Image (tube, rainbow, N blue to C red; front, side):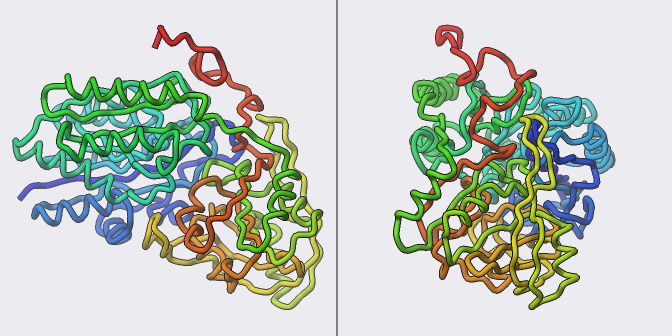
Length: 500
């Protein structure tokens, strides 16, 4: 019987974020709480979910192989992780490899950074490769990966998500795993070619469901489906990372001969570079966006506050957009979740039915961009108190349990505000419905998200106003104090095309 080892290490790092990322932030129960997991308990938690690890479980069982989960830990997007995180995951994985195995299947993010390492995933792979020089290794990466040569040189097969919101996570693991299994069977000989462009893309302009990325990704998908190559992946990058290996890239997994893969790589990256201006998002004043939303008529209308997205490392407590919504008199609004454990304590103590006035949010300063926290004074009635737990039913991370911590609904009359103990980006309507709010019946849905909300909310409305609120996930890259990013890089600099 063959023996496989698998592991999960996931964190998207906003190097400008003031939110710390200790090892304790990593959980095997999804980003939230509980610490990393290993063994059968970790396998059972991922089984049946829309994740790469779940695909690895199914592939191993279909192959009749023994599967060992060395370690599983994910942390919510935030600032640089401790360097000790990499030591911990390397030790856990190499300990699982020590008795011997036939292949390693990894579910990694690719957009991670630690305090001292620009490419922790590459470092992880390099250390594993030194421990097991001939071990076949498959890796499934997030679409927002910042790939380096260290990563590519130390893996056998790499695939990436093709969607944003990420609704093909299981499929991505399946693509990587199946190619590695074919390699183990002697059917193919994977060889990878890759390249990265000196190009920061804006997160609001990356999604493969729309141009300028759509037909770039479609071309990669078509090449893989036609069998011209084994796998083709385009990585939009995670641009809020002041590291040396940030940038849009692509990886082609070829069968032995890399000539055809190299030509496809040049084609994909050539298309992206020619469209580089289309990957830039232009911001507008918050007041203008809210006024525009008011002019659109009946709802639901989503107000996507993308400057403070905890799914990109935001603090989730910047109150400027909610303040503008209230100042302009919007009604029948649901908003949140806002991260404020102190407010939750106060509201829980007051109890359901109590009328409370409190200073909401604004507890966190963002020194990287010179933004001070500014609480919003609100008065409302406590409508609901929950444990903040629900299971995702939408197409992104289906079946995964979310834990927002204790969660309270504060009703001001015009706005039902959801306030939570843990940070959570709202990409599934469960963040509202579990607390008795039906967002489909609201005129306005104010959420802190930029793309992932589309997975769960476009089923109830496609009417979206992008709101450029302040925060550490702002789309105004001029606000960031770039120091480590390689230069020149578009759009921060003029780049000589002849030097690509």
